[in-house]
Image: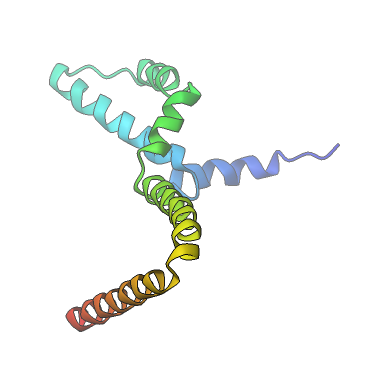
Length: 124
């Protein structure tokens, strides 16, 4: 059996520096909000704050809710839904009217190129 205790110090340092661990940002937000509310009462108990943090973030449902509300997840989910519905629509319409589908693809391609060209022009 290998002893990985030597990695613990680096892991804790990485967590405290916020490297590659989303739990740090979540804990930091919780800690700062607790400190802000405690400043008004002039009493702050770190132990109680940590207990509240463990209770509020221990359930997996909250983690899924946080992930499902992120911009990346919403973008990925909408992309996959559009991809699936587009392929289903394309296969049914493409067999009956291939010229119309090709024309729509051409218009979409040109519109995306124009949008990309204008975006590059504005950044310069």
